[in-house]
Image (cartoon, rainbow, N blue to C red; front, top):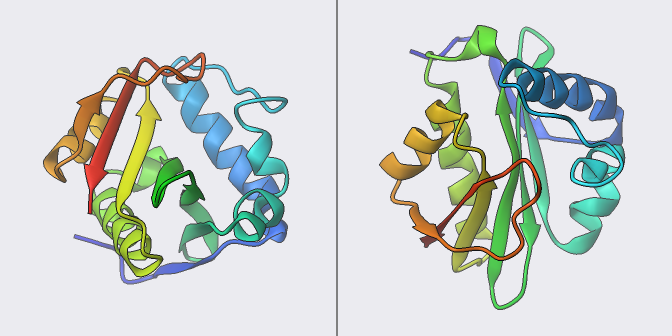
Length: 156
């Protein structure tokens, strides 16, 4: 059951500090290393890395605090990558992860993407389960970032 004080909105660069705190804390919770100079560089300028390239980025707030995030980064041939989908541990088990993923997939359809791909780490068991429940299938991806050992795709 979701919290009544949940708000979803388009992210801006004003959200960068809160997004870094969210993403880095979740990574560390699972024993993964934040990489602000490479893999997580997109968090330094949400507007340039997502919106100016034809993508989208959204935050989930509970009582005014950023507790979740996801972004769509455009790739070639009508596909996009789902990036930076994170949810604070205090908000898990309430349906917010499912709601965020469904919002991301609906936005991808609205933006006329035909395929969504993502990379993740197997230690993020809840996320992997969520992706599989929503029809994502495993793929072999040659460009996995260092902390990721799995890739998935979904045709919309």
